[in-house]
Each structure stands twice: as structure tokens, then as C-alpha cells.
Amino acid sequence: MANASPVTTDPGAAHVVEGPADVKPPPSVARRLGIGFWLSIGWLLIVIVLALIAPLITLEPGEARADPDRSVFSLAHPDDTAVGGRLEAPSSELWFGADNTGRDVLSLTIWGSRISLLVGFLAIVIGFLVGGSLGIAAGYFRGLFDKVVSFVFTTLLSFPALILAILITTLLGRTVFWISVSLGVLAIAPVGRLARAQTLVYAERDFVTAARILGAKDSRIVLKELLPNVVIPMSALALLGMGIAIVAEGTLAFLGISAADGLSWGKQIFESGSNARTLQDGPHAALFPIGVVFLTVLALNFAGDRLREVFDAKELAF
Image (cartoon, rainbow, N blue to C red; front, side, top):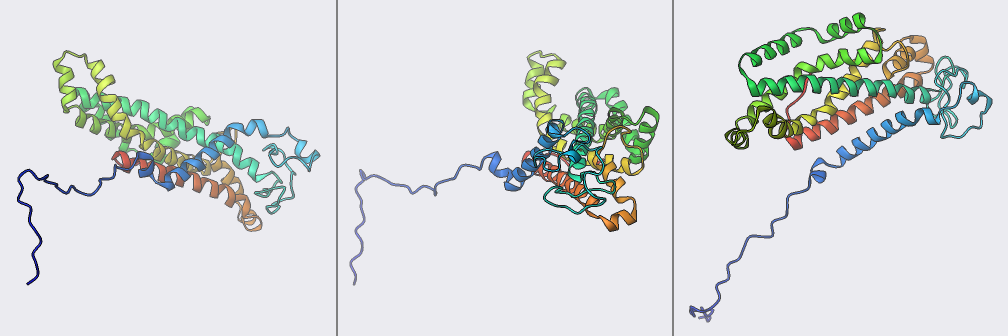
């Protein structure tokens, strides 16, 4: 018989308990967001930086025609015609080609981003300031005020969004500000309802109850206790809302009621793609700005969706 292994019976012997395997710390927020999120943010930064520096790298009208050997880091003026041939194909001189009047499509796309991004940003800011404030106040104070605000939100959601935007823009004017206001009004009800729902959840938490017991004023509870907790998950929706506003501005441009002054992505696509003959002869004039809009809205939606998942925010729909 094989000898059995000796068993230690010494009570003084050390008792070693095997612990679980090494527990890895949870991944950081940056790693949880993933590489796709950071690629999206990188694209958005490129678009935003180009929109901001466009006036600095744009030549004076006529200067591009007079200097065909200009630097690749300079843009032809967006109103400068005959920079290239009619519907000239993309080349090393004209990266995005030329439109039906010979304008540089790349210059038009970069300048168009200024209005489109500005409208999207202002619209979501208006929606968050007005809708968020009303939603937080309704969720905290409740009672009659909550019923009135909820009725206003329901009424706004009852209007067809496109018709409401057309009505506001037609009555108030086709400026960048009023177009942003019209799209911001569409964001008030969805954002407000989300703010109200988040406030109802956090208003019952122990830290809010403790603040009430200690005699804190309502204004302090809302600003110091509720607002930071409500804004964090709601901020993840800003990117999603901005993407929706950019698409909505393009829709208004197709209907001919976008900004009267200046160029936006929607107006550029409409001018290049509304004519079937032009679209057949030079599809690049419309496809390049469409591609930029697609990538920008995709980046906004993807980044916003990743933030929504990480911070467990609700979906936003206009």
C-alpha cells in the first residue's frame, strides 16, 4: 500500500486559506467608452476646428483664380466661382471637386459646417435650458405646477414637429437664431420629460431627505443636490439631440426655409442635388457634403449612445 501523505496536527501550525484569484479593478470610464467613441470624438473635433478656422484659411474673393498654385492649406472663398471647371472632378487641387458654378466643394462644405453646427448646438442648448429647468422644477415641486408643465409638454409633443418648425421659422424669420429657436422648441418637451423623470427618482433619495431635515432651502436642494445628479445622465443626450437638430436643419433647407444668409450643409446639398442633370454629371458635388453630414451625425449618435450606456441615461427622441 502506498504511504499516505502526513497530516499536520500541530495546532500551532499556520492555517493558510487560499483566497480568490486577483480581482482586477473595474475599467476606467475612458476604456468603457471604447475606441469607437474616441474615433467619433476625433472626427467631431476635426470638423469643429475646421469650422472655427475657416475665416483664417480662406482666401479673398478672386484670389484663388489668380493664384492657381496656392497652398493646399488655403481655401477658395465660398462665393468665388470658376475656381474650377463646371462640375470638375476631384483632383489634387480641388479635393472635393467643383460644383455646377465652379465653386470649390471642399470650401463650401467647411463653410457650411459653421451654420449647421451652430444651429445644432444652439437648438440643444435652448432645449436643455428651458425644458431641463421646467422638468426639474416640475419633478421637485409637483402639485399643480407639475400638472401644468406636464400638460405643456404633452401639448408640444402633440404638434407635428416639422410643421411646428416651419410655422415658427416662417413667422419669426429665416435667420440662424430663429431657426435654432424653432428647433430648440422641439427639444423642450422631450428633454423636459426626461428631466422630470430623473428628478422624481433623485428627489426621494436619502441625501435629499437629509438636506430637507437640516433645513436647506428649496433653491439650495435643487441647485446643489438635484441638479448635478440630473445633469450628468442628461448631458449624455446632448450629442444625440445635436445630431437630430443638424438633420432637421437640412430638412428645412430642402423646403427652402433654412437660413437666408450664409451656407449650411442642407442648403449646399439641396443646391447640388436638386437638379437631376447636375447630379448625374457631377455626383461628387452632392456626395461629398452628404458624406460629411453622414459621418458627423453618425459620430454624434454613436458618441451619445456610448455615453448613454455608460451613464445609464434614457433615450431621446424628437
